[in-house]
Image (cartoon, rainbow, N blue to C red; front, top):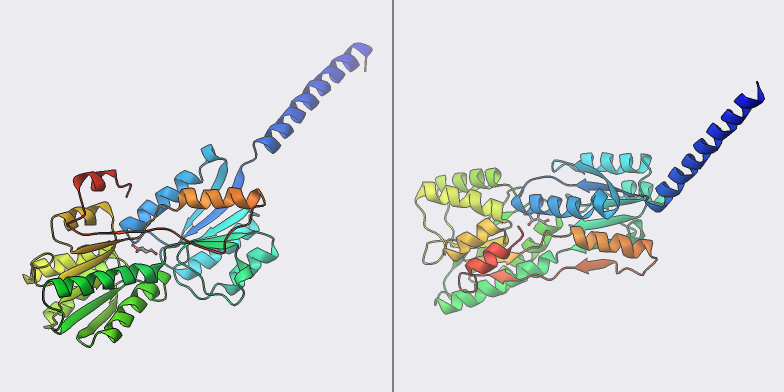
Length: 329
Ligand code: AHR
């Protein structure tokens, strides 16, 4: 090789090395945090708002590479997703578990790979709590207590506190923390009031379609109720359709008192119109909260094991157009 060509080659090599060096620096400084998020499904308006909140907060713009998996309400899909996230060597796993049990092995795999797991929305029931970093979501039992306290007062106010009250417990997904906590609250209250009688309970999977079928069949077979304790808004919408078809009135001044959980915009509008008596809030806006937890973890801060978010409740009396329109979900 001539001296002239050697010189050109050296220059090309230097330029290449310099640019490679620059790239390496860039990717270290601007490295995205790789997050695997296993969402349990898309069964409700609440879930849609939750997914949006999570994906917006964990976006590339905020410094994340998000691997998102929707499990369609099936735990086996979630177990598979966790294993895939481990194989893809993510920095952190976020799990919104469909039900509480059955997570020990998958979480142990993540732990053995040194990947922290944040549980969001519902909780997991595992032998060793060290299998996950922390859990953030709603205190579902306390939501249920808000509902039963309201019902107790309402029955006194309307002079029905000595009457027999037949309660239809329209449950969500079997074994989900939201179902367990809300059911525990109504069962506790029924045990404390001789005149409260849970005369029907069914699992409606938190979906409008399933709830419609259940309530329609119950009414068609001659079933009656004084209170519908509906464990989410979408099931309430399904039940309302069945009431309408059967010519049964509900809400303020109606035959059936409706208690509904979530307080999504659509339900709040119906509550303001008097069609739903009580909307107990369940916040789906966990994205920024989870994001903050990830940052705290990476900064080496101490993190509480269980974090419950603050929630409220709505009736036609405390609602306004403003509250509804300002609502993000
Ligand atoms: O886990 C939260 C519950 O799940 C919400 O109440 C319900 O709408 C959702 O499907």
